Image (cartoon, rainbow, N blue to C red; front, top):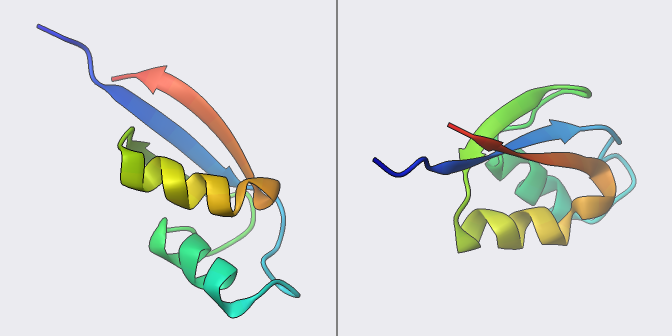
Length: 64
């Protein structure tokens, strides 16, 4: 059985002061407050969202 890859995403910088679409991207990732961590499947869509707001996030790849 193949292990699936998961991204562990943590919000380390506040989206206050950034554009509305960047705030919406952070929200769409499921991040609501500072230092909150979520785990998302490693898909091209999630990678694109992470790339858009990478300056606010800490991202780790984990095996699930």
